[in-house]
Length: 203
Image (cartoon, rainbow, N blue to C red; front, top):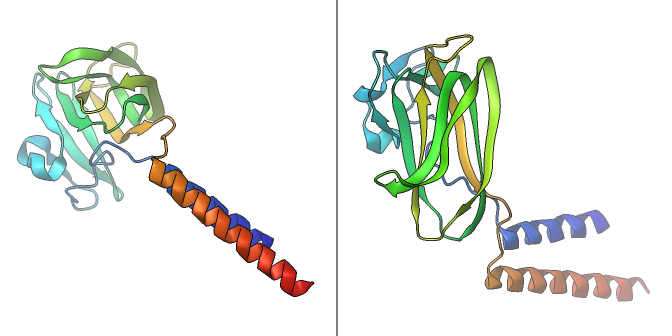
């Protein structure tokens, strides 16, 4: 019975503090869903489906690729893929993504690419998929931001593309709303009453 109470208390606490939501829409590039083992050029996809914008500056082809059922973006050298997001609460946020190949990333304000929050940052070229993190960065409630990724041929491996997947922006430590605290206290109080009644019946 104690384990049950502990599990309920943990779920109440999680509900009060809130799970860390990813502010990036379609950070896994699973939409639109393309056929297994195929690819679609980014220029042929609508922004409303992909939720990522695209700037062409290279000679390659930026694609949405499916590799054995796992979809990811493949950014050609000289091209940029970006998406916008906003935050509801000011605070510290972490940035995470998986990459393969070579390129760069950065974070700016959504208007005219200013102000610069994270300067263009070069990624150490990687033949296999590598998890990367950035931050924490200070973001302001109500402001909009753009996170962008660029394909770039960099030495010594000279990969012609940047593979990108699982892009996320999450709060470092979400602050519970007052109603969240109230819900947690009420729930724990109810658990205490239930426990006391069971003890009295046992006695």
